[in-house]
Length: 311
Ligand SMILES: NC(=O)c1ccc[n+]([C@@H]2O[C@H](COP(=O)([O-])OP(=O)(O)OC[C@H]3O[C@@H](n4cnc5c(N)ncnc54)[C@H](O)[C@@H]3O)[C@@H](O)[C@H]2O)c1
Image (cartoon, rainbow, N blue to C red; front, top):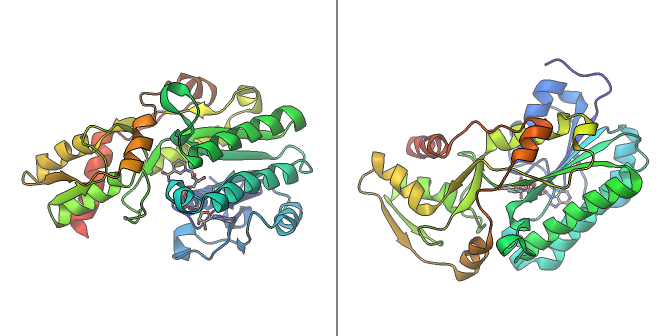
């Protein structure tokens, strides 16, 4: 796709796991100069974002954010800057500030950018047990952000669109962050190396996951939908596949029969995982903006194992 005139995109949190490949994909399609990457620290691997402008700005520093958005006449924001579940446990106040106040700043600034839109990645952590309130601070911050998007949409006609992403998996991700879905990467690296994985969740703990390629495709499809299709919707639920440590172990054993799945249960993460919803109904996302994931659990698992065996 060649550069689209008048499209000026901002990706916040562009040095992160999702922000970097998203920035690269957008630059490939819209042109390097049309996509501004923003993060409060420099990327470890600048090449992972592709070529193009980078701004070191904290989303909590409103003046700088506002000047950038005004000056560059931003038309679309992919708001990826956030602190995730593990940081929410250890740094709750910072998580609340970055997640909620960072989004508030952006939405409020966008009030003066006529017609601009914002894509917000919420999380399955926003679901509580049986559809009730979320059980983690990270989930509460995500649910609050979804409500902020709705409020700004209804009150100020801001085109804010949000979707609840499942845990995202990719062979590119580093292991060992302490997050809820870390097993989905760690298990393959450990299987390829030690032939054993000590899992922090019970074998049959089910968690919704999505491959990075499908997650990026979903955010871009939501951003590209005509406004009238998505105008009145609350946050979109999306489902790709439901995985568990035991299911991954079965796939691994087809290729590494001696692989052993052992357990060192982390009760905090287990409790949060037990409260998550699975098998979500994503028919609205499919109908409104053509959501269609392509990568299955088996394919994703085999790709992660292939990459781990090559390391
Ligand atoms: N990775 C997943 O599995 C997953 C699943 C569901 C939702 N999400 C959401 O998607 C978004 C991106 O996730 P990710 O995995 O890329 O996270 P990440 O932690 O890898 O990246 C987040 C980036 O935001 C930056 N950042 C944090 N605070 C900032 C601030 N105040 N100003 C500017 N930059 C700041 C960090 O430096 C980091 O580079 C987050 O909102 C996350 O909650 C992720």
